[in-house]
Length: 394
Image (cartoon, rainbow, N blue to C red; front, side, top):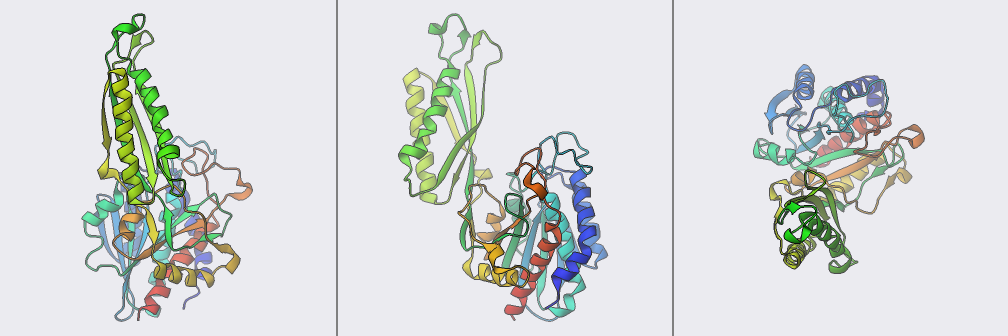
C-alpha cells in the first residue's frame, strides 16, 4: 500500500493554492464552468480519460489500475452559495453575492489531489477509480442530473465514497458510522389566498397576512403533537412574503420552508398533517390555499452501507489514531450523495476542519472557513479508502 499521507503532505501547498483559487472564484450550481474547466485540464494532464458536461457542468475522470478489479466511485462537489462573504481573508470571494460557504472549494481541491495521488500509484492497485466532480449539490439536484447522464454506467461502480469537511468538528476528527447519517430533505411552498382591501376597513377583507401567520404558528405544532418523540423530524419556515405597502391588506401570502426526516412513514405523516392543518386554518378564516411539496427537489436520507463503512474505518485507522474516529447522533442537514448511495453501496464521511481558534462561522454562514491542514489529510484518506476497497475486492 502506498504511503498516501506522506504523498499528500508533499502536495499540501498545491492543495491549498487550488482551494484558495476556487474560493476566490465561486460559481453557483450548474454554473461551475471555470471550476470544471480547471478540473478537466488537471485530469487530462494526468493522462486520465475525461468526460465533461456530465449533469450539465460535472466532470468524470477514470483511473485504471493494474489488472482486473472492481470499480469504485469517489465523488467531490463543486458549487458555491448565494452568500456575501464577510471573512476578510486575503483569498475571499471576488464575486459579490457568491461564496464558498460550505467547503466545496476544499472538496474540489481534494478531488484533484486524489486524482494526482492515485494516478501516481496506479501500478500498485487493481481495478478502476471513477472520479465524479459533481455540480449543484446545494439543493439543485446535481446528483440526479449526473445519474441521468450515466455517471453510474459504463462502467457501473461497485462501491461509492464521499467526504465532507466539517468545521464544527476538531481538525482531524473523523465521523465513520453505518446507517443513517444525514436527513432527507423536502421543500414546500404554500400560497394563502384571501381578499385584499383597505387597511382601514378590515371587515371587507380576508387578511392573507393574518391567515399566513396563524398557519405558520400552527404548522410548527405538528412536530410536537403529531410526530412521535421517538421519531426525528424538523419543519422550518424560511420565507414568508405578503403585501406591497403599509395601508393595504394583502390578498395573497407566500410561505416556503423545509422538512427533514429519516423515515418515509414519518415524512408521509408530516405532509398529511400539514395538508389537514392548512385546510382547517384557511377554512376558519374563509380563505383558500395551495400546498406543494417540490418532489423534484426531494433529497433522500444518507444511509451508509455497513460493509463499506467497515472498509472506510479500516482505511482511516492507517492514518488516524483510534480515538479520532468517532460516531455522532445523525444530523438534520441533507446531502444529495444520498441519491448515489441509494443505488450503490457506499459510505459518506465527515472530516473535522474547525479553523484555528474556532472563531469562524458555521456552514452556510458569511464568515465560514476551514482549517486547510484538513486538505492533505482528506486527500490521503479518500485515496486510502479507494485502494483499500480495490485490494479487498480482488
